[in-house]
Picture 1 (spheres, helix red, strand yellow):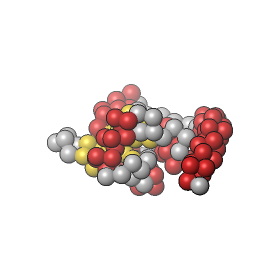
Picture 2 (cartoon, rainbow, N blue to C red; picture 1 turned 30 degrees about the vertical axis):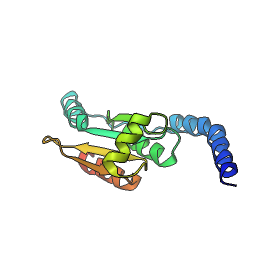
Picture 3 (spheres, one colour; picture 1 turned 90 degrees about the vertical axis):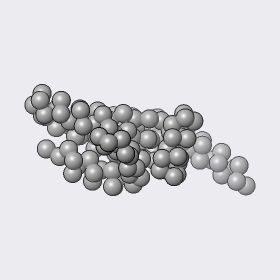
Picture 4 (cartoon, helix red, strand yellow; picture 1 turned 120 degrees about the vertical axis):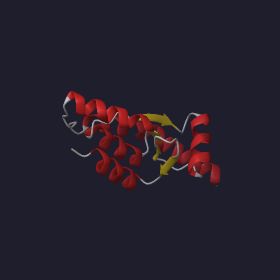
Length: 129
């Protein structure tokens, strides 16, 4: 029974995935406008951020939409199809749950945020205009 359920959901992802990605592109919010200096500072601050994601995860899409709205060039790593990224996510956060934002500070210590709402709140609090 378990393989049948997995097959059902895999088929559902294959069919709905492209539609979800298309909707994400079409409903992308307008990015905030900053001065060149302000955007350069935001870009520098984003160098310590990494988002572990699945492409068609609705919660990951929600976080990516907010990243686009805030004009944040955060590195995105695919934890679904890349075993190394999934292993790093598992080791760092303790689970393979996405979306997960790895926040590395200047001293090199990392904090892992694992809920889309918490990630969005963090990004808005740190980068809101």
